[in-house]
Amino acid sequence: MKINEIFYSIQGEGPQVGMPTWFIRTTGCNLRCSWCDSAYALEEGKEMSIESIIDSIPASVCNNVVITGGEPLLQKDLLTLMKKLGCFNIYVETNGTIYDSKLTGFAHFIVSPKLQFLNKEYEDNIKKWKHMATFKFVVGDKKEFDEAIAFCKKLKLDSMQLIEPVYFMPKGTTEKELKERMKSIKEWLFEEQISFVRISPRLHISLWGNKRGV
Image (cartoon, rainbow, N blue to C red; front, top):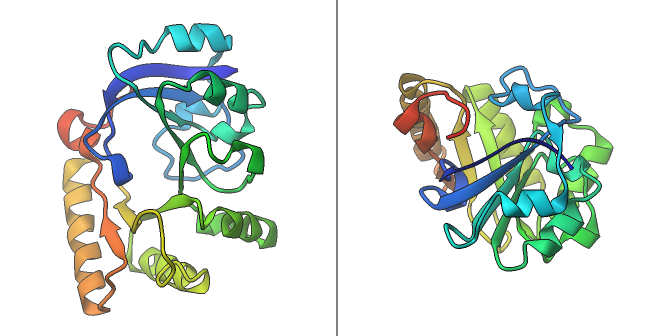
């Protein structure tokens, strides 16, 4: 597998926020988001064997692992890695463009749709994920908020029995930006009486700033 970095930290966002975690960041992505906070993972990385990856994350230190990217579902050996990580609690962060039924059951998937790239194939794959994943949307302004709410309602994410609530995470790389946008998201949720969304912080930025390896 091509790996960008492996590090130990806490999960800063989404349903596992605050949880001590090993992070395995894969190299490569099939999207190019202008605001990507891990653009260094688009190309940078080195080939690692499954065995060397596992040796880098001792379960004696922590048995939670997040496989992120980039887009980890591009990695052809992802299923093998997840099977070898059987003693870990596995979480996979994906943009939802790819759906592979063989992967389900081995991890908790967090799907973060990138609506600016939405087409029929992308939407069809997201629909396949909706009964088995947590959804997280990155929101920078009211337009993106409205688009995310409309998409949730279109897919009936506002009414179905989900594994977790839908998470809205503020876009930003500084604590000031994140605080201001979280306040705005809260106001919009209250104004529109939306209760199926939970606001996610970006705790790692609040603690360490916009740095790699945290």
